[in-house]
Image 1 (cartoon, rainbow, N blue to C red):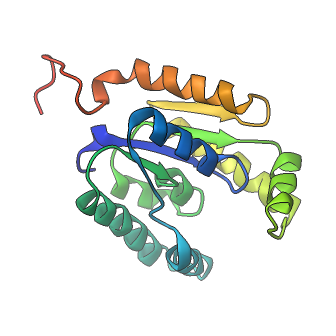
Image 2 (image 1 turned 135 degrees about the vertical axis):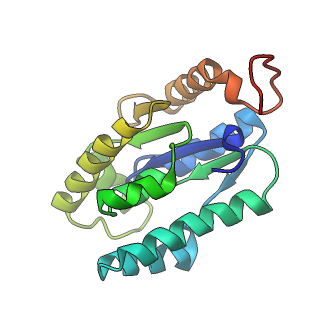
Image 3 (image 1 turned 45 degrees about the horizontal axis):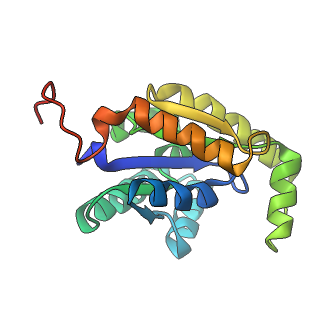
Length: 185
């Protein structure tokens, strides 16, 4: 990934608090929230993998992230990224993505997901499908050595922000603008 040090990923299933926390992290870091799979692009990617056109979905998702990295300056707080795609792509596509950037996985109980989706006027969907994807996210996050898992329904907003702040501080050598004489990039 280009300029990986300027990337912070918030990923997870629908209704787990990604967007809310992404805005908070952008404020904390002075970064910008980006949604590489937003609007109709995300629908198109979902249509591709839903029709088992995994190579096309993989390429479109990766090129969308590459486009964001080339067009947007500064620290980027991604609202969805690699983990979302890994929950739907067969594992042999994962190597195309390289080493995952530091990632905060937002998760919650199925009951919380259904409640949050309903509160924002969305179809709450199928509970079993939610349970499947929540489990998939927890499996794929194990691939990321620089990750934090937040149960957003067990930790309030302030607690989540504090945990993310601590996580970023632990990974401060990766933050843009920090001088580290040991780095040679």
